[in-house]
Image 1 (cartoon, rainbow, N blue to C red):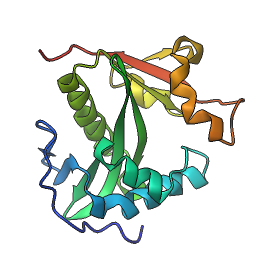
Image 2: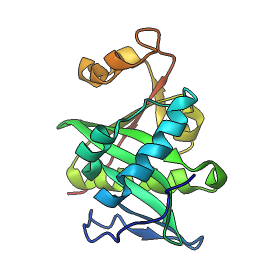
Image 3: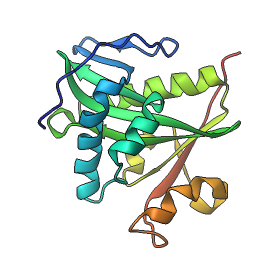
Image 4: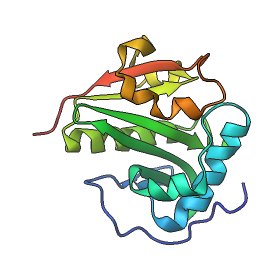
Length: 178
């Protein structure tokens, strides 16, 4: 995808969220300079009906929720941890550039987001996904969407699939860092 080059180094820290890997992939907190590339990647998946679209405004307003994966200065993935309440957060907008899929990058992103959730003291993290197997491999379990609090549906109202959504809810109970 065009525009995926890294535009600015990150100086903002999220605990130990920056994880260099042997593959040369680093997961770090997103910075404002990453927003256009993240929105482009997210919206490429949204165009295929695989996730909710995000406007530039939405990504800018939530940039502190995001981490990005990069390799050789090129942004190749992103994901966000959005806190909904004192006991629950959502992993959302998880995307990996097509050419880099199935290399563990999505798992690296989720690992960093879960680390952040633990540091925040959150006992549970959930996701709404079309790929529950991915999350199940990371320890999440499938739950009935109706078992989640109604407050999670705030973004769903604007979705083209609402109210006939076919996303699967997955949740993970965390051991909280004290």
